Image 1 (spheres, helix red, strand yellow):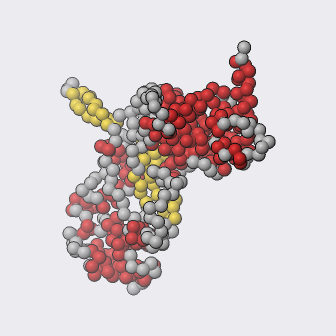
Image 2 (cartoon, rainbow, N blue to C red):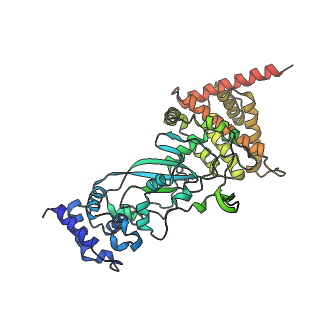
Image 3 (tube, one colour):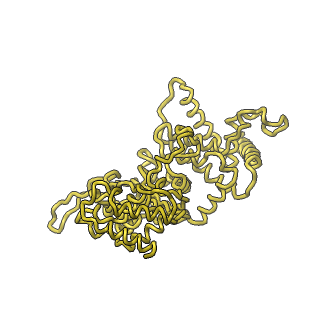
Length: 445
């Protein structure tokens, strides 16, 4: 009997255990036999937790309620899946992001990203519904309810730990000798791949498309992310509930004229031009952004703060937008003039005026310089706690968003030239000073 046949025999013995199974699966003779075989074959050490996680995801019959008996894979399929799990070095990680409050958006596809509505069957495949049903039989995945909403789906190919137990219970394999409370300043609230997709979408003029600016300029909200690893040894999370998203009453009449109270997603309506505008979120535009972000023009946390502003509310949102602008076109030498040569052009300009001039040069818009200075004054009044600070109006909030978005978007185009950041910033300053001087001369009597 070959080793493969031995493994298959051990799996068949496990599959023959009647429900509800032993109190401790890991102590069952058939499980111990399979564990020893895997340890011998794959040389990964004891992997009992990982193996029990995988068996549950494969539908070990004694772990399933009778009504879900059909979800059990046969032992032959289980053997192939286990072999793949023990030998794989990479896997697909899929982030399912509901676009709560989104209006009717066109389907989009760029890089490893898709945006759109998906049918209940498509969502069942994306969420791996059978695996969820095997692990959480009392918590069914409501694909019909989730199919009412738009989704941002981001996939990435990731390297996985060769140790099965580290994939099943990663907390037990943390390096406790390091500072577990340390902060990585480059990490955000969401995975980097999701934030990259969000940054791309946020370069679109949502604030110009919104019909309800006093409610929100955003075309959608992203309240949570559900992440799936296509790795048998990783423990899946409980399925999400569509009730966690925004629904509103919806009254319809049946064929007898009787009112029926239903629910439907709440949306932030957008103007008709939004669909045409979003159609420009193409593979070519995504590639251009990736090219830009690989240059030193985007070494500063521009994307970080533009996404932070989207996720924030109130004054925190305004502050994040202002910081995104500073990250985009600010320089350390603006605040530390000793770093500038004494013969440097425009050395007499203040730090605020230098950033404002670069904004004007980048956007070829003299009015944007004054807008930046007005918003910077608002920001400074808040930071320094000046008395009499008035409430921030909707136009001010939207202006901060628009200016930050336009600045980031224009910088993507500048980055295509491949110039070093110092040269690009010097050129924008020269251009901005000239743009402002021409505007002043034109407006003078």
